[in-house]
Image (cartoon, rainbow over all chains, first blue to last red; front, side, top):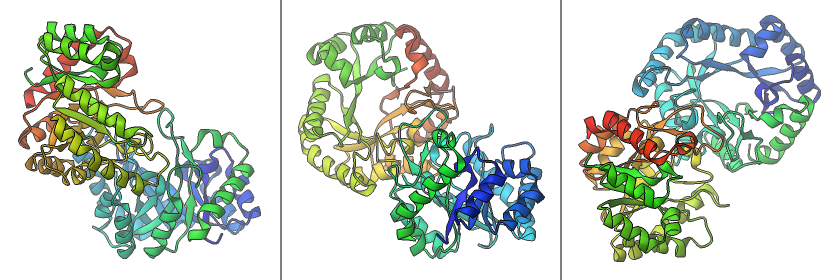
Length: 268
Length: 268
């Protein structure tokens, strides 16, 4: 369990303080946090609460959404929040079209990264571009493949910009195995998240993910691939699921740990 | 309007006979047909009805679904139906995982094509592999990119196997422009379909497409690209939309023609 990290979004309705206590009680050493609940709790208080519980923060989700009018200030704040939390990585969901043509939206992401990298470097936070499943291209993320994320990252030192590999977003890609190897060889794997794919997709296609092992993705093969690529960092389980969210936080955590033990640990 | 073809699925509840008469009355010269309504009407009767109305059949949708137990017999029948209708192209939606691992499901598609190509060649029907949007990878089509479809097609003479380029399925792909050029240079473009992308996606993600111009896809650029790639064949408008389907067939056809005139014709 040393590499397991519980991403807060998996128990979206579990208050931060209880989540931290619940993870500590369950022997979980690391959490992936989200900005909104952290700010609701109070940034400094959240940082102290996590630290006092002996937890580390594997990543902060999420910066990006470069389509927003205040994207620059907002992302600078996100970087600072990650630094305050001791999160080494800020996950970037880059945003959709935002009224731009697709090529222009993608070019804008590169421009935004150019602007943010110096601030992130100064704060000691690594930016991690997360390729999003192509079904989110219009409204969440125009970086649709691991190849595109690696191309963006390649313009900066690897300590400044990496990629997040989330099984849910990349599993359909026939080039994914060579891309994972390439990402590892270039020291670009800044995070690894696992979630499983089930159908039918719900309206809005956001809240229909499943715990590892419950769907169609070959989770063991992904964990083997990122390990073979040299990644030794935390492994976050991040599952957005409307039904899961209705359950008590401790139950969600227990099922997440069970899924992790069955479908991830044997292949770490 | 010479290249316009009205795909029957755009007016899913319009009976075949009325659709044929409506298209003829509107000056439409070509239709894309679907197997189920054709068989409901009677194959020979449908073929005669279309012919008597002076219409040509641009394609028959769809073969494929190689995950089904009776895929071989079913696809042989689909090929024969296309031949009877005078459709030069049978569109293949290859099917999802069907209980296989993803690589195995993709390998099975290649095996199925090997088996079907001789039958298709003998019938004078070109098989057209349609890459499906990656959100359909699990349950509808494991061929998720134009690159993968072209790789499959490349194993056969171009007159036997081509690809269908549907804007809805490929628009997110950062490599799509070079792939369209490659497809054209290799004489692999067996069909071109237009539909637009709108959000939020509905549950099941099947019936949320839009008429050209109503969404986020740069339809003019796609039409220019397939034209520049040398494609001179029919252009089908194929839109699966639950709201559109509630309207009378002639109204749907009128709106489809209007969208085609505005967003496709200037770039043919």
